[in-house]
Image 1 (spheres, rainbow, N blue to C red):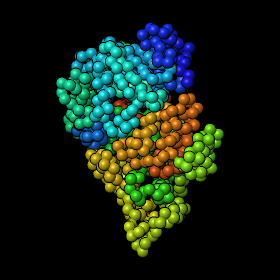
Image 2 (image 1 turned 90 degrees about the horizontal axis):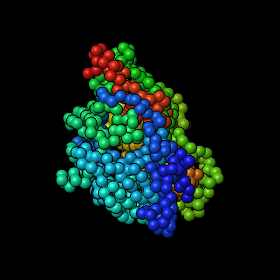
Image 3 (image 1 turned 135 degrees about the vertical axis):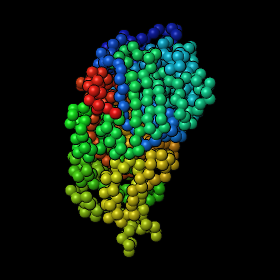
Image 4 (image 1 turned 30 degrees about the vertical axis):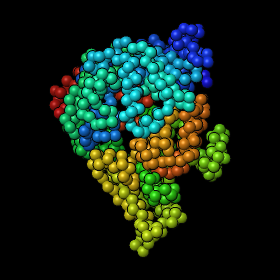
Length: 621
């Protein structure tokens, strides 16, 4: 493996002679000491960088930005399955390492000054900053880091523990500002530093003083080191976070031009229609619009016409979000891929895009859409070799070697595409679901029923046409819209047939894939909502995790993408490569924005003069 850094950061990497502290690893491995880490490539920023390239270093501090939240909340613990967590409830916490919006595959010291690691990556030592303070004024030290990791291993989410367990064999507090993570022999080396440095750091003394638990819901936030703290809340109505005047990191280079708002407020609404009316009335000030209908037809209200609200589309270079309806594979009726393929044909994206979305969207086809990681056509070259090996092991059928990557079905301009209906009918019959005297699909005396569980009324106009198409196929289908709390409870209990699900992938995916698609985490993961378990996928995830070059990673992700799509456990939905946002004209942002972040709560800022004009005009409530 090549762990060399670019010429821009060579001065921050020290190869020290034998006998000098932790300079040589066991087996005489050379030790790297750096301000950041990237497994495959160079670090963009040198150790002495003055600011991030994409921010405005002169951005003023002050003002408030407000957004909306959906449904209800009863907890500020973002790390427990219990309760409905409030929006932005992880805001008070920071981790040892941080990523930046223009270098998303690298990690940089944030709560630390250096990372120290051998070429073998058998361990890593973080030297912590001596100026980090929790929001109660107490200094953060290595004991807090060790305590937090142990807490996650004891009380953290089962899916997280399943993915992380066994990767760290020991943690040693070397001194108050030095902590050493020792990694197990079989831990994937590409993950270990990000794992160790990516955990939010909590206050050990606060947990010991209060007796709080990580696995319980709580209306009292944990103590963190972050720039914002909870200021006030009214259950199911609003949450307000305030910027800390005593924030330890306000002047460090990584934070120049960031954390600019004095207050960040979230107003809660029972549904999206009420939330939109609230925005029109100035109850909150920033809206990221996810309804194409509203974007195309409803932004003609008074505040827009008066010039008080900016409506704009900003570029989004991130991966296409893998958003979909997913089947609950734990239920026997969905275990036949022929059934899943047939049902997937009943969602007519082309009709929906024209009639409902005003042509604003593209179809999701891949879990890594809008990137070079997406599988296309028939497998070739290195990808073909990876898949051939799985075929030779008997983990997957040979048809994947010659079949093009599965694409979402293309439909005609009518809501019910008759050609796809005939294809779907043939697939259902092949799967043994025949039409009975009442026109319903039946097998072994049981009628095929299907419930789409949802909580947002905004999806009704999209889901109901699919329901009608399924009825034409002979399915006893219905939409069951429940409140947010019920939807959360039923999804956690896996008590559903079909639900909406968003699977957010990354440009350098690794062991986190196990939480989405791995067999080990299937019954304890909110990410593997569909209950997917497949030995070929497990084998590919293992290969991805152990990729030693970017070429290996790209090849293996394409193979995994191809396999997952062939399993058809989803009905892929839609995406757009722009942010559609509207906001009251009192905010400004860097131009251009970084490719991988909108950053409205991170590096936008408040214009007091513009705000005064809005106030004088009575534009805000």
